[in-house]
Image (tube, rainbow, N blue to C red):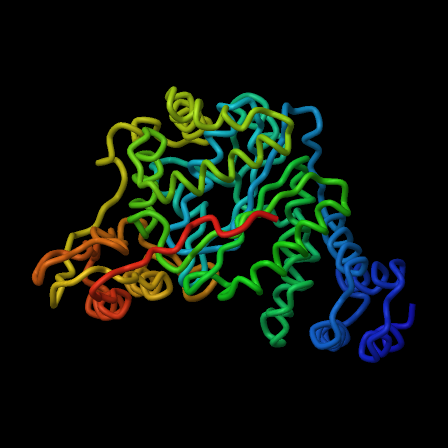
Length: 423
């Protein structure tokens, strides 16, 4: 394989051969192909595109570039991925529901960046909880508890990590084949047989329009099915934050409340819809999801999961064990009906408070965040509290500014449906 000829091939819009694609990219992983040639290829692929076969080959090459977990000996191994949003604590609810329904929910998760939160950050709000573990520990907890969530291992799809870092500095991130293959390479390497995808749509999501989200979802489903996995995608709205809590410890509290059957309704709707799809993929009765929730079995699974990973299980009942900063209300400047709450602006408010990262590796404050007292459709009076801001003085005025922009009041509201489409 000649790297220059390979780059020229894609520049001219031609299709690669699988063996050439593998040789070029694995050569890059071994430092035999320089980054400037890979950068040139990424731009050619960004502009010319990759066809479905090339996208699958790219995904499988990345998935096999490191360790590939084998979950085949575990009962009904399932995984779930969200394309990222604001207030998105769905994994903390879906995982326990599926584990209590007879599935093995074994998931590798990332940390938050910019206005979107990360599952690992949320869970690290629980005293003692640890997401780093060996492969043996991951498999043992999956077998014993049926529920394990681990921090992304550098041994999992290392080629993806190396390529993403290069895409980030060469303006080649926003390509559907490259995005889809990056996401699915890690899902394939994590070993689950069935995968449910929660593709967010709207202001607080990476995909702003239904058309963009639909294309990404279809591409990921095709990759998964091409690799022999069972895959289903739901397109869900991220115009407003999901639930009322945005911020790490606040979201853990809300997820525990949901597992107790105490809402909020939008979070439960999305979590149950995803859990039911996962159960159907595994040939199980989707009614098991609601039973697991209503019986308290899902809550018990969450408690066992926290304890298995070093967390204090008392946090399920005693929220004072979770960090919480000082409270400051945001007051309505006039009366009206909440027409919209811009998820992106709320995410920026939490970022300003120190609850998120502007750069990878930055420390975060688990105790800051925003709790939305009013959501679209609610009527408010002038001077009534719209939201509570949890802060440590840092960034408070900036956060309040973002929240004032996030809330739009009018004479009436027409809340959009949450689950928009299934693919």
